[in-house]
Amino acid sequence: MIKVGIAGSGGISYAHANAYLALKERAKVVAVSDVELGRAEALAKYLGGAKVYSDYKDMVESEDIDAVDICLPHHIHKEAILYSIEREKHVICEKPLTTSLSDAEEIEAKVKESKVVFLPAHTNIFIPSTQEAKRIIAMGTIGKVLTLRTTDCFRGNVTGWRTKKELMGGGELIDTGYHPTYLMLYLANSEPTEVFAYLERFVQRMEGEDTALVLIKFKDNSIGLIHSSWAYDTPYGHQYFSVSGEYGELFGGGNKIGLKMHGWQEVKKELAWKDGFLGEIEHFINVIEKREKPIQTVSDSLKVMRVIAAAYKSAEEGKPIRL
Ligand SMILES: NC(=O)c1ccc[n+]([C@@H]2O[C@H](COP(=O)([O-])OP(=O)(O)OC[C@H]3O[C@@H](n4cnc5c(N)ncnc54)[C@H](O)[C@@H]3O)[C@@H](O)[C@H]2O)c1
Image 1 (cartoon, rainbow, N blue to C red):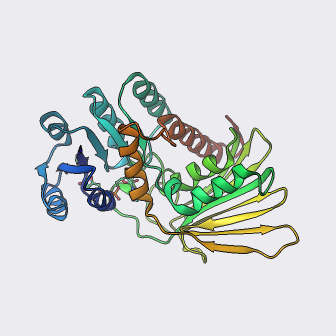
Image 2: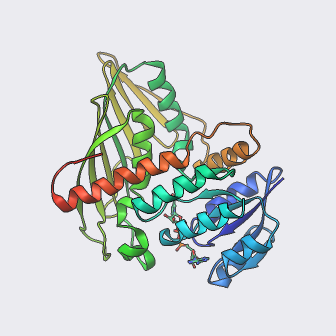
């Protein structure tokens, strides 16, 4: 039984809590924390009981836990990751890795020096359409990948710490835009070499951008387009992708996947649904128990941070940035 402490008891901690409840034979959340104690108490109640702390450091220090699940605002990720790994706790951390590239490099080095498991919570890697797309691309069905598009757009109402660039590390791109970025790098399976971005704040009252369009050139000559926004909804749901290959087109999102080979009708399939949070936390447990090799590491997260930092630089300078 893996004993877990959750740092941060806000919105997303409930998605993590649901996963631990579903995996209750293998992991137990024994403690939760939040600077707003009422939030920690509410999460503890939802979980059917857990010790409550206002300071996550006290929780990590005092509780007999194996792992820390970080669901904190972005500007506290670095401190919380380092505090936890220094105390030899395994860590799963919500995106982004941290708020700056230099901090991300420091975290990567410290994680690599440590003996603990670190899993970036790249949720959408674990949803059925991503795994099926990865499998189809690897089989060579669509041939060489030419272009890729990953999208994550929804109209929201941005408030609180998300309105501040300093606490976010940027705007929408380093928050929701982090998902289509790691998804792009995972499906492309080639090293990004150049990044060009347009970032705009269309409707939200926030310091950073609410919309990002980012072009990535890869080493194998393929090109990716990331489209992410909090300014509007998109017609096919908020998260989806498409990949054009030599022989055909692959597209999907959630539990749906489609394949359209050149000259043939498209074939669509509904896959058995598996929640991405459940998938990532189950994988985290499997990696700790040495049943699985991690499919995402701190270095994958650092690559995402490199692309995002280059996108911010590109938007600022109005030119492509070589990585
Ligand atoms: N994977 C996804 O789809 C997804 C969706 C939403 C959020 N997230 C990520 O989850 C993280 C949290 O986002 P959220 O939407 O839950 O935010 P939130 O504001 O709802 O929750 C954050 C919580 O952290 C608490 N907190 C702040 N400082 C603290 C400290 N020093 N110690 C303990 N608690 C502290 C706040 O009081 C708040 O309850 C972010 O990294 C965000 O990007 C991921």
